[in-house]
Length: 546
Image 1: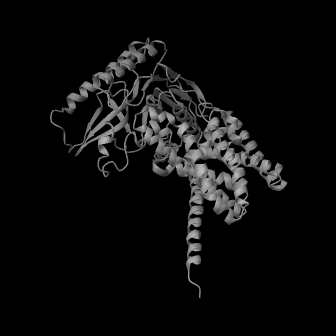
Image 2: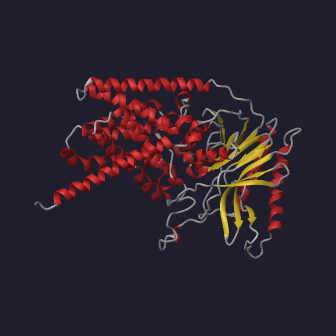
Image 3: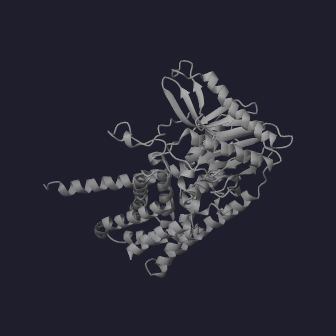
């Protein structure tokens, strides 16, 4: 029976997430696991010791299968990513095992499940968002991304707050199941049901209140250009120029169907081609044959050409700003390469740039590659990207926008911390522009997970998100997390977005994720106490008698 329960929860979790996204199942997905944990907690320690290895192994196998299927789109990026996918799935499967162990210990100490389960689950999600650079995709709260009334609490505690509510409902269902089976009295079942009902009513009421608040009309129009161009790690200069030309033509065609365009946005790395933006420090070592001034003039020919072409396609159109994904090379003692986002003003010159601060493990860097003999020979070309200096906001006439690149919206704390940093210096953005190249993932559910992360980030920061993607979520998301409009992932086209201004202040941005971190400390403390007691009991057993 335990095997069926463990497998059932993994299956229900998968069904509740993309690609099927049957979100109501999220409210019962953890119920089989919770029933099983409560059953194990009711047994004495000797019984648990016998079952521990078998149960943990079953949970790990079921969870690894869940992650393997959920993130299978990663394998399309490169043949070597199959091994990385297997390793990542095995790693992520450890967290449900930790949940089983920690929750059983709390229940053994008479902590009510309605308190213990939501706190520990949030704590484990928080650890996952930090450990090994972090990953927010497929958090339990993301199952409700398309239900605006239930996710507005994300401006209080991020996706963690939504996950907390979902787990609480699961606990109520589990306690009712146990009561009906005669394994528990009516008191915990009634208590859990009442607590879950109060939380749900409060969540719905808060959501309704937030959704009915007014925002101001926007005055800045963004052309979000998206295409589905094939990409590869080792890309020739000719292919890069083909992609650039396709995006230029797509931008002009979209401009002809538009009334007014203030900003043109291109996806990650699509503007670079074989022509990144060069920066040189005063004492930089410039490679022989590189003339920075000549190179800049050639680069500006490209920026001016795009801006003027878009302006010429729209009657009485001024030259727009450009926010485009572009590689950046900085010459210092050695050349440093960044995944960048550059802001080009109407004059065609670069006004500012942002360097990606959160890199993709195995995609933009590989840990320990310099210290493991022979590993560097297996690394695809194009890796070795540097970490950017920090958050950056671009001033676009009357609107200020913050830049994000690729996975930075899929690691929630990154974007939230960017907003916190900008808020401290009085530069809180009116909107966030995120550019990504999801063409690696072949239109799989990985792209859906990415979009859902952005939706919850928009609520958490109370700022619209404007996403331009290659083979991914080219979308306009409002500050309530609703997708106003989006392109199909395989489409070539553009969206004209005019985001509304939202002056609301997010508690989540102001205080960060400290409530979730406290829950994470509770998880870690539980594990450390368990380890200490295990060694202490071993010492007592092995100690010689008097």
